[in-house]
Image (tube, rainbow, N blue to C red; front, side, top):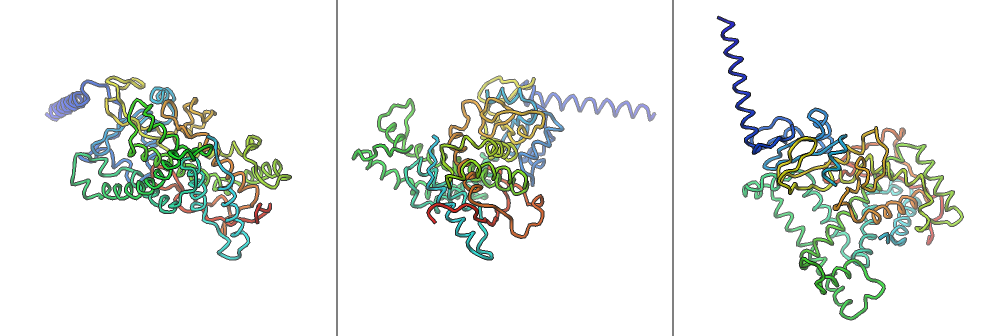
Length: 441
């Protein structure tokens, strides 16, 4: 009799599995969907990554479910392409104008701290580096330092926080209640209004310069965009709101990522004294007789370039790159169908940490993609690298660096913060020791 019960139970379980399989296939409209972790109602797969850094959590999940996974986060279906299957990355992703004035301002600030005693000799690197990159970006984009730089940077930071992770209003877009309770929409609108108010004043000044013919050789990116708008040479209209959104995106992408990379590079050199000594010796041997770091000669610093490249590999500024959306009716990756409208995430952080490969970072080798690849590859790669190269070389040339109260450099806290960019969780506090006089002091 017990054997009969076991048989009935087995048949019932098989029937249940068949029904579940049919429902899953029907849900996918006959598509062969990628595997993924088990889901819960309403939140989907969120419990698998909650409380963790998304790029690390997804890397761990991919080790169990494979390099192509289907996750549901709220109402969003995310297809996550990750880790070691390079073919899948290829399938999905088939002005150098830094002014030395910004770097000089940073060096003078550090030299002032180096001359101080006690707590005053410590530099909060994040604030200094953010201001440096913001000023350099401002010169290229709007032609001069932004008079409202501090307010602009504050709102930029808030905007980055709003898109830092899985915002409830984005995960459940059909629910007005969720959007209202999260308050994200209201905060985003306040941030936008403040930033656009600053940009309105800058645009008005540029329009006056264009109409009077005073732009001349000092044309910046905003001058160019305004002329394109006036000529109407684009196939799509470039209205003022779109133009301001473009400018804000350039500041966000150019400032946050470059400052984050600089901070990580200094932190990695602090943790590795041998690498710090070698990089410092290289830049001082190259430019010691000049007393400063010339921008045009940065190509001589081969080891420094390797340091920056390794920093981008270990600490990809945008670990999951910018989200893509599948627009094809039938797109197959590694034998799986990608539903139309699915959000596609590429874990560039995990790809860069595959120890089996050695590649370039310009987007042709899909194992290392700090700037993305394909048509949506970062157009500001050269500008971003210039921001990092000149600043880092100058900081190493003029100063030795130490962490107050840290006996063992290997114990430096390297915890990442949660966000769209993988910045350091703790501010990097360093004491500069002046070795080579800073010009102008």
